Each structure stands twice: as structure tokens, then as C-alpha cells.
Amino acid sequence: MTEKLFEAALGVTSPWYVAATEFDGAAKTLTIRVDFKPGSRFAVTGSEGEHPVHDTVDKRYRHLNFFQHECFLEVRVPRVKLPDGSVRQVEPPWSGKLSGFTLLFEALVVMLCQQMTFAAAARLVGESRHRVAAICERYVELALAQTDLSAVRELAIDETSRARGHDYITLAADATERRVVAVAEGRSADAIGQLAAELKSRGCPAKQISSVSIDMSPAFIRGCAEHLPQARVTFDKFHVIWHANAAVDRTRRIEQRTAPSLKGLRWSLLKDRSRLSVAAAADLDNLIAHMTTIRTARAWAYKEQLREILERKQINVVRSMLAHWCTCVMRSKVAPMKEVAAMIRNNLAGIIAWAQTRQTNGFLEALNGLFQSAKRRARGFTRLSTIRTVIFLIAGKLSFRAINPHAA
Image 1 (tube, rainbow, N blue to C red):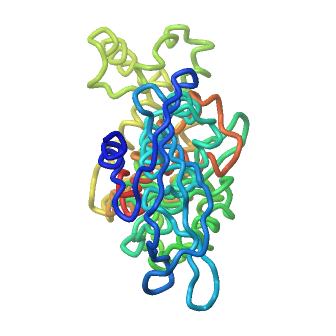
Image 2: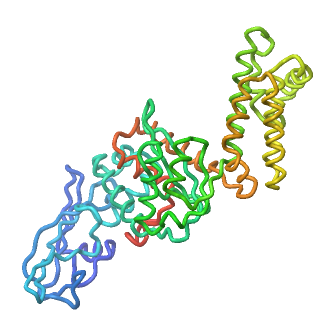
């Protein structure tokens, strides 16, 4: 009766059956022995029909816990003899993608690791962190091999730090589906080449990419020109405004040496005015009233003008207004903002493209935040393969159902 109950619970069907069960209370383990009926024939991948059993090997699979007890399947696995004389091992229907685990156990591990660190998931399931990471890495690579990238036309590319110092990786995301599709080491022009090569290997040739959103890194610009020659480059508004905000803050820090009243105004100058408190807005208005004498106030005004220009959608209007804005800034005495004007002149085509494409890296910045949070919880990642696995688990929007019917 017990064996029949476990057969139903495990989904074991003919010719397989549960031969015996063994519960060890001291070791907190449940072992279920699975066998097959004598005279059974089995099919194997790559060979038509069913074949007779040649011999057997004993296999042990880790399964989902039975309450608080670890559960193992000990299986007499057949090897069959094919018509050509070769011998092949049969894969039981519950066998996972990594040796020694069932599909249900692996599905649980992948689900947990999408929400927590490998170490935390390993503690929950009672396995080593390395075995848990190996399961996830295997599933990610299998899912990527089956991912269809034939519809990808627009990319968002950005870098993120993988460790302290200047150690980076570069991510490429499908700008339409908002999912990471490729990961490369470094943040150079060669990293763009690595991304393009990975996309090509999965059915997305470089000529297919019509638009790419990047920051104004010279290395990224050169890399896109070399490896994504058909793609129109867009520098989104948020990167441009980020540089303008940095120029406002540099101006404030320089000027506050002789104007102590500027101290404490940093966030009032950088935040959207509509989000300021009444007191902070009043302080900002008081500063703007002295625009003719305080360069920080003029820098803030230039930044707000730039923000308004980039809200427009007519390319010719944006081009004309940006040219006029740059001329006015270059004639001013606000040195940090002059650097922004020079940058805009040097990258005018990509900035103007924003008016038409409205393509942004904002969602990729949010995904970067999730990855950095995972990295901190795990106290850092050392191997690129581990970093790659974590990023795709978090942001790849991968489907594991075709690999494992129990997975999400």
C-alpha cells in the first residue's frame, strides 16, 4: 500500500514502479527504491522504436524534501542494446538536467535562486552552494539556446560594475521586450563585438539591429560603428541630463567657496522642482532671483532649458534649439556647463535621434540596481559565468518550461 501511495505521489508509471521505501529518522532521510518490470523495453533519444535491456546501473537522485526529511530516489536504470550493437543508458522521465537530481528538485532550486542568493537557496534545500549554482547555470544556458532572437531590432546597451574598482561587464537588452539578451566582459569597443557575436550565435545577426541606445562613452560609440554598422545610435535624454546635473553640482561646489549661502542646496538644484518641499522650493526661487550674479543659478537655468528642449519631438526644432543653447552656454562664464555644450556638439546626431526614437536605457539602469543588490547580498561574485547566470535569472525573462515541465 505504501509503495502504491509513493508511486502516485511521484508520478511513477509503468513500466517503472516503487519497489521499496526506507525511512531513517536519525539521519532524517527517506529513500525510495524504484525499479522496472522484467521484460520491459525502452526508447532512447536518437533511435526509433523500443529496445531490450542489456544491463542496469544504480543511480541516486535527490528529490524534494519529504516534510523536513531529505528524500532520495535510488533507481535501477536500464541500459539498452540498439540495432547497431551499441549500448545506451535510458534517462528516466524524472531525471534532471544535472546528474543526481530530479526535475522537480531542479525546478525548486531555479525558482528559489530567482528570488535569493545561491547560498540562501542552498541552505533551504540542504545542498552545497556550488551544486545549486551549477543547476542554475545549466538551466540558463539551455534556456538561452532555445530563446528566439529573430524579432530583436532595437538594443539598449549599458555597463555595470562586477567588483570594486574598474571591473565592469556590458549588458545588451532587447529594448522592446525589456530583457537582457547578451552579456560581455569589460566596457570597451571589443565588448560590443562580444555582444554582437553572442547575438549572432543565437540567430540575431548584426545587420538585423536597426537601433541602439547607449551612453556617450567613446568606446561604445566606436564599438557600435564597428560591430553594429546598420544601427542608428541614440543617446537618451536621461544620460544627457545626468551630465548637465553633474555640471550644476560642480559649479555649486566651486562657487560655494566664496558664497556660503550655496551650502545645503545640492539636492534642491538636482531634483525636479515639483518634487521639492515648500521650504526647498523657496530657497531655490531665492537663488534663481540672483541669476545675474550667481553662476550656479545660471547653470541650473541652462540645465532646465536643456530638459525642455529634449522633451520636444520635432527633429529640426530640437536640432535648431540645441545649436542655439550650445552657443549661449559657450558664451557664458559657467565653465562646467561649457563642457556639456561641447559634448552635445560632438554627439549631436545621437542626441537628436532621441527626439524620434525615444529609446532609453532607463529600464536597464533599474535592472542594474537589482543585480547590484544581488551582488551585495552574495558578498560579490568572482566568476564571469556566475555573474552571467545571475543576470539572466534576474533580467533575462527566460522560460524554463520547455526544459523542465515543472519550472516556471
